[in-house]
Image (cartoon, rainbow, N blue to C red; front, side, top):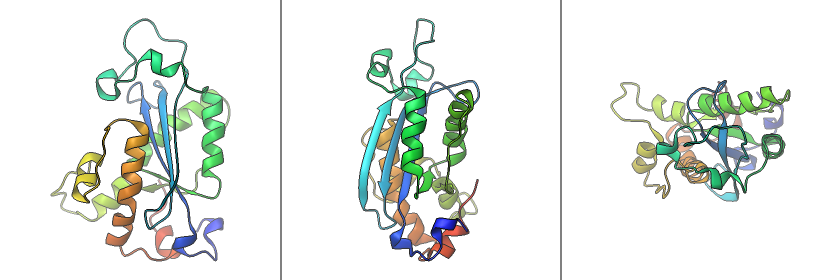
Length: 196
Protein backbone atom coordinates (compact mmCIF):
# COMPACT_ATOMS: atom_id res chain seq x y z
CA UNK A 1 0.00 0.00 0.00
CA UNK A 2 1.22 3.52 -0.69
CA UNK A 3 2.92 4.85 2.42
CA UNK A 4 0.78 7.96 2.75
CA UNK A 5 -2.39 5.81 2.72
CA UNK A 6 -1.45 4.32 6.06
CA UNK A 7 -3.70 5.31 8.97
CA UNK A 8 -5.97 7.38 6.72
CA UNK A 9 -9.64 6.99 5.95
CA UNK A 10 -10.96 7.29 2.41
CA UNK A 11 -12.45 10.68 3.27
CA UNK A 12 -8.97 11.93 4.25
CA UNK A 13 -7.59 11.33 0.77
CA UNK A 14 -7.27 13.85 -2.01
CA UNK A 15 -7.23 12.85 -5.67
CA UNK A 16 -5.47 14.66 -8.52
CA UNK A 17 -7.60 13.95 -11.58
CA UNK A 18 -5.53 14.66 -14.69
CA UNK A 19 -6.27 14.93 -18.39
CA UNK A 20 -4.04 15.90 -21.30
CA UNK A 21 -4.66 17.01 -24.85
CA UNK A 22 -1.86 16.03 -27.21
CA UNK A 23 -0.52 16.32 -30.75
CA UNK A 24 -1.20 12.64 -31.48
CA UNK A 25 -1.27 9.15 -30.01
CA UNK A 26 2.40 8.34 -29.36
CA UNK A 27 3.78 9.22 -25.94
CA UNK A 28 7.32 9.09 -27.30
CA UNK A 29 6.83 11.01 -30.56
CA UNK A 30 3.96 13.38 -29.72
CA UNK A 31 3.61 16.17 -27.18
CA UNK A 32 1.27 17.54 -24.53
CA UNK A 33 -0.55 20.71 -25.60
CA UNK A 34 -2.91 21.18 -22.66
CA UNK A 35 -3.04 19.97 -19.07
CA UNK A 36 -6.09 19.90 -16.81
CA UNK A 37 -5.96 19.00 -13.11
CA UNK A 38 -8.87 18.73 -10.68
CA UNK A 39 -8.20 18.14 -6.98
CA UNK A 40 -11.13 16.38 -5.36
CA UNK A 41 -12.25 14.15 -2.50
CA UNK A 42 -13.74 10.67 -2.73
CA UNK A 43 -17.25 12.09 -2.24
CA UNK A 44 -16.87 14.31 -5.31
CA UNK A 45 -16.08 17.55 -3.49
CA UNK A 46 -13.97 19.69 -5.84
CA UNK A 47 -11.21 21.60 -4.06
CA UNK A 48 -9.25 23.09 -6.94
CA UNK A 49 -9.18 23.25 -10.72
CA UNK A 50 -6.22 24.12 -12.91
CA UNK A 51 -5.67 24.25 -16.65
CA UNK A 52 -2.90 25.48 -18.87
CA UNK A 53 -1.64 25.28 -22.40
CA UNK A 54 1.97 24.24 -22.99
CA UNK A 55 4.19 26.52 -25.07
CA UNK A 56 5.60 24.84 -28.18
CA UNK A 57 7.98 26.37 -30.72
CA UNK A 58 9.04 23.62 -33.08
CA UNK A 59 6.21 22.81 -35.52
CA UNK A 60 6.16 23.50 -39.20
CA UNK A 61 3.27 25.65 -40.41
CA UNK A 62 -0.11 23.96 -40.31
CA UNK A 63 -2.44 22.46 -37.75
CA UNK A 64 -1.28 21.17 -34.37
CA UNK A 65 -1.50 17.41 -34.66
CA UNK A 66 -4.97 16.16 -33.67
CA UNK A 67 -6.62 19.56 -34.26
CA UNK A 68 -9.90 17.97 -35.40
CA UNK A 69 -10.18 16.37 -31.95
CA UNK A 70 -9.00 19.07 -29.55
CA UNK A 71 -9.36 22.26 -31.62
CA UNK A 72 -6.21 23.77 -30.07
CA UNK A 73 -4.60 26.53 -32.15
CA UNK A 74 -1.08 27.95 -32.08
CA UNK A 75 -2.45 31.18 -30.65
CA UNK A 76 -3.78 29.21 -27.65
CA UNK A 77 -0.27 28.04 -26.79
CA UNK A 78 1.16 31.55 -26.51
CA UNK A 79 -0.41 31.98 -23.08
CA UNK A 80 0.91 28.62 -21.90
CA UNK A 81 3.74 27.54 -19.64
CA UNK A 82 6.92 25.69 -20.57
CA UNK A 83 7.13 21.89 -20.37
CA UNK A 84 9.52 22.30 -17.40
CA UNK A 85 6.97 24.44 -15.58
CA UNK A 86 4.23 21.92 -16.39
CA UNK A 87 6.21 19.03 -14.84
CA UNK A 88 7.04 21.11 -11.74
CA UNK A 89 3.39 22.18 -11.32
CA UNK A 90 2.15 18.63 -11.81
CA UNK A 91 4.61 17.19 -9.28
CA UNK A 92 3.38 19.80 -6.83
CA UNK A 93 -0.22 18.63 -7.33
CA UNK A 94 0.75 14.96 -7.10
CA UNK A 95 2.41 15.34 -3.71
CA UNK A 96 0.14 13.56 -1.20
CA UNK A 97 -2.62 12.91 -3.76
CA UNK A 98 -3.70 9.86 -5.74
CA UNK A 99 -3.18 10.27 -9.49
CA UNK A 100 -6.44 9.57 -11.35
CA UNK A 101 -7.15 9.55 -15.08
CA UNK A 102 -9.54 7.95 -17.53
CA UNK A 103 -7.22 5.61 -19.45
CA UNK A 104 -4.33 6.53 -17.16
CA UNK A 105 -1.80 4.64 -19.30
CA UNK A 106 -2.38 7.14 -22.13
CA UNK A 107 -1.86 10.28 -20.04
CA UNK A 108 1.06 8.79 -18.09
CA UNK A 109 2.75 7.81 -21.36
CA UNK A 110 2.65 11.40 -22.59
CA UNK A 111 3.63 12.92 -19.26
CA UNK A 112 6.54 10.50 -18.93
CA UNK A 113 7.59 11.33 -22.48
CA UNK A 114 7.74 15.01 -21.54
CA UNK A 115 9.66 14.21 -18.35
CA UNK A 116 12.13 11.95 -20.19
CA UNK A 117 12.93 14.70 -22.70
CA UNK A 118 13.75 16.96 -19.74
CA UNK A 119 15.74 14.28 -17.86
CA UNK A 120 13.40 14.46 -14.91
CA UNK A 121 10.64 12.36 -13.35
CA UNK A 122 7.02 12.63 -12.33
CA UNK A 123 6.12 11.09 -8.98
CA UNK A 124 2.82 9.24 -9.30
CA UNK A 125 0.86 7.84 -6.37
CA UNK A 126 -1.36 5.23 -7.94
CA UNK A 127 -2.54 5.48 -10.60
CA UNK A 128 -6.25 4.97 -10.21
CA UNK A 129 -7.75 4.42 -13.65
CA UNK A 130 -11.47 5.23 -14.01
CA UNK A 131 -11.53 3.39 -17.36
CA UNK A 132 -10.46 0.17 -15.61
CA UNK A 133 -12.94 0.78 -12.79
CA UNK A 134 -15.75 1.21 -15.32
CA UNK A 135 -14.78 -1.85 -17.36
CA UNK A 136 -14.55 -4.01 -14.24
CA UNK A 137 -18.25 -3.34 -13.63
CA UNK A 138 -19.07 -4.66 -17.10
CA UNK A 139 -17.11 -7.91 -17.59
CA UNK A 140 -19.09 -8.84 -20.72
CA UNK A 141 -18.39 -5.38 -22.22
CA UNK A 142 -22.00 -4.66 -23.09
CA UNK A 143 -21.43 -0.91 -22.65
CA UNK A 144 -18.99 1.63 -24.05
CA UNK A 145 -16.45 2.87 -21.52
CA UNK A 146 -15.28 5.95 -23.36
CA UNK A 147 -15.29 8.95 -21.04
CA UNK A 148 -18.23 10.61 -22.78
CA UNK A 149 -20.35 7.49 -22.40
CA UNK A 150 -19.34 6.89 -18.77
CA UNK A 151 -20.18 10.48 -17.81
CA UNK A 152 -23.59 10.21 -19.52
CA UNK A 153 -24.28 6.95 -17.70
CA UNK A 154 -23.82 8.72 -14.36
CA UNK A 155 -25.63 11.92 -15.36
CA UNK A 156 -22.45 14.03 -15.52
CA UNK A 157 -22.42 16.73 -18.21
CA UNK A 158 -19.09 17.48 -19.93
CA UNK A 159 -19.62 20.78 -21.71
CA UNK A 160 -16.39 20.82 -23.76
CA UNK A 161 -15.31 17.27 -24.70
CA UNK A 162 -11.58 16.99 -25.52
CA UNK A 163 -10.75 20.02 -23.40
CA UNK A 164 -8.29 18.93 -20.71
CA UNK A 165 -9.98 20.65 -17.77
CA UNK A 166 -13.51 19.71 -18.85
CA UNK A 167 -12.52 16.04 -19.25
CA UNK A 168 -10.65 16.06 -15.91
CA UNK A 169 -13.71 17.55 -14.23
CA UNK A 170 -15.98 14.95 -15.84
CA UNK A 171 -13.67 12.20 -14.59
CA UNK A 172 -13.60 13.72 -11.10
CA UNK A 173 -17.40 13.81 -10.99
CA UNK A 174 -17.82 10.15 -12.01
CA UNK A 175 -15.12 9.01 -9.57
CA UNK A 176 -17.44 8.84 -6.51
CA UNK A 177 -19.99 6.88 -8.56
CA UNK A 178 -17.35 4.34 -9.56
CA UNK A 179 -15.97 4.06 -6.03
CA UNK A 180 -19.52 3.47 -4.78
CA UNK A 181 -20.27 0.89 -7.47
CA UNK A 182 -17.19 -1.05 -6.36
CA UNK A 183 -18.15 -0.64 -2.68
CA UNK A 184 -14.80 1.02 -1.98
CA UNK A 185 -15.13 2.54 1.48
CA UNK A 186 -11.60 2.11 2.91
CA UNK A 187 -8.07 2.92 1.82
CA UNK A 188 -7.26 -0.81 1.95
CA UNK A 189 -9.97 -1.50 -0.62
CA UNK A 190 -8.82 1.44 -2.73
CA UNK A 191 -5.24 0.14 -2.70
CA UNK A 192 -6.30 -3.03 -4.51
CA UNK A 193 -7.33 -0.89 -7.52
CA UNK A 194 -4.15 1.18 -7.72
CA UNK A 195 -1.44 0.48 -10.26
CA UNK A 196 -0.82 0.56 -13.97
